Image (tube, rainbow, N blue to C red; front, side, top):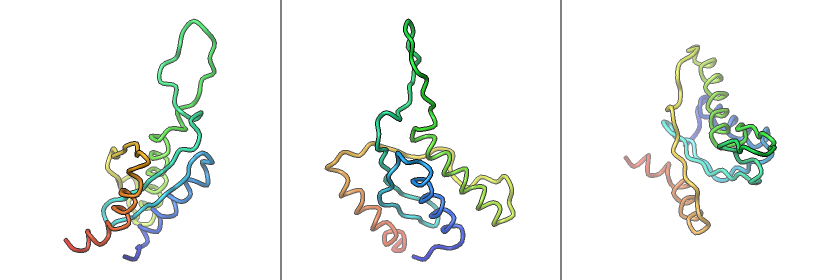
Length: 126
C-alpha cells in the first residue's frame, strides 16, 4: 500500500510525536485508508498524570500534557490542521472523537505487532 498526500501527513506527524516528546518511543504503526494502528511506549513513569490533588501537604503540580490523551490530542490536532490546509477544508473534522487504547502486556506485544503488520492485507482482501 502506498501513502497518498494525506497518509504522508499522518506519517510525518506521527513520527514527529517522538521527536517533540523525549519520553515517547514509537513502536510499529500502520496507516490505513480510513484508520490508523500504532503501539506507543511511554518511557518514564514520572510523566504520569496526578489525577487528584492531595490535601494536607505540599505537592508539586504536574501538567497532564504528558499523558497518552495529550499525545494523541496533539497528533490529531496537528495532522488535522495540515490535512485541512491541503484540502482547503478549514475546520472540518478528520479523526473520530475518541481513540481505542489498552495497556499491552509483554506476552501480547508480538501478537499485536503481527496484527498491525498484516492489517493492510486483511483490508485489501475485503
